[in-house]
Image (tube, rainbow, N blue to C red; front, side):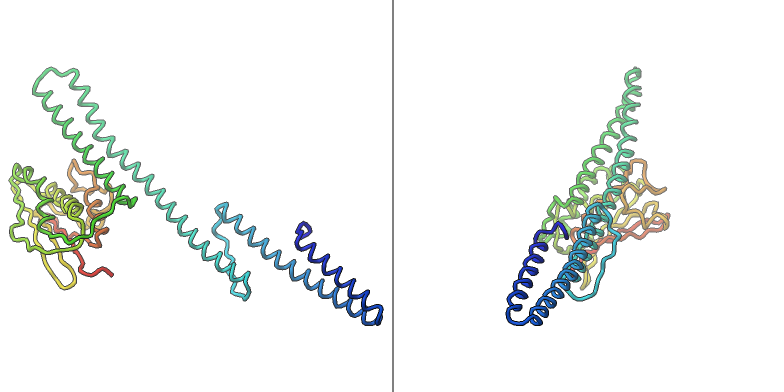
Length: 332
């Protein structure tokens, strides 16, 4: 307060006015002059005490804000008393809660990014290592049959890396919110046809039946291409867990609340302990195929969530797995 020019000038003006008024009253009555001087001094003392207290509270708030800027979010300044400073304290506490939640979210995202980078590094390391080994073997291999096998392995690992990188880029764009999904009326039959098309040859070579002949067509609001991406990843997962000669059936159900697409296979099934985790990124269960990287179902769930749809899986080991996608007619 000693260095506060405004406060010092106010006190000097108050002293000057009090002294001037006392001198003027002294010409009339000494008792009157003494009373004016005493009243003025008491008023000045009260003003100084009150102002000092306010400046102390402001200094406390300033100190508190400085500590918040330094990352100390565990300081409680709640004050339910009346007055503008108390209101300011309460508003600062609200801002503190917001900053604290945002800081926690950023820390969580930072840890998640670190984990994702570690998982991605591990997923890319496996095919790269295999390709490096096969390349070294090719250099010293003269047998045409062995060279052909090595080239097939390299091609397989290259396809795996390409799919992994493309899928990771899609996930990253969805997470960052840089992709705007369309909200148009979409027919589920169009989505299924688009999703099934890339797997028809694979299914034919493995004698797996893709049955969607009895699919009941319905319309939902979403993005046809991204919906096909989500459904396609589920079909890919079913193909990976279905033995040659198996069957995958796509069917639809309509209710007053939602329209549902069901994708069911008669493959090996998923153990009950693994079922809650199959939509987690980079999750590998015991029944996962050798070429699985664990992000296809995670991408499907992310896309469907953006379309306000839900996905659920039910499975029985040795019987098969069914995926239920629900497109709700009304979004609350």
